Image 1 (cartoon, one colour):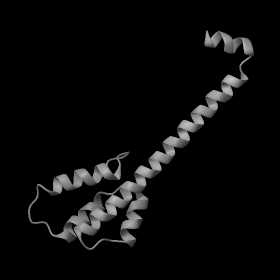
Image 2 (tube, helix red, strand yellow; image 1 turned 90 degrees about the vertical axis):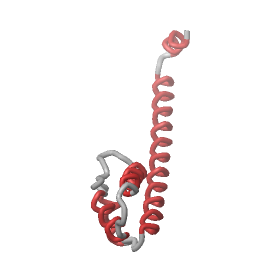
Image 3 (cartoon, one colour; image 1 turned 120 degrees about the vertical axis):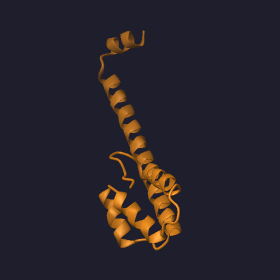
Image 4 (cartoon, helix red, strand yellow; image 1 turned 120 degrees about the horizontal axis):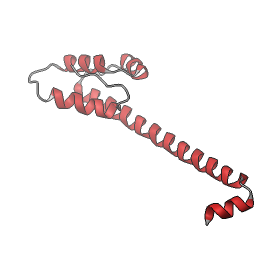
Length: 107
């Protein structure tokens, strides 16, 4: 059985799960859905899965795609905030340096 590893994205878990699933013939949709749910380690995804449990593997893939897209968007937002924060800190530190120090640092 596949488990979502700590710190791994839902997209990487889904890929690993379905790559593994492809090697096992004749598995009922209900079993695929059950084992996928059993491998999810992110609590919010477990809750969403419980509330909106898919009935088919196609619905499961659609749900995973939505989760993965949301996760990608969140990571993009986090990177943008981190980059902006780093630039702000750098600009603030440079502005606080005495004029002579800035000239020496640029030389």
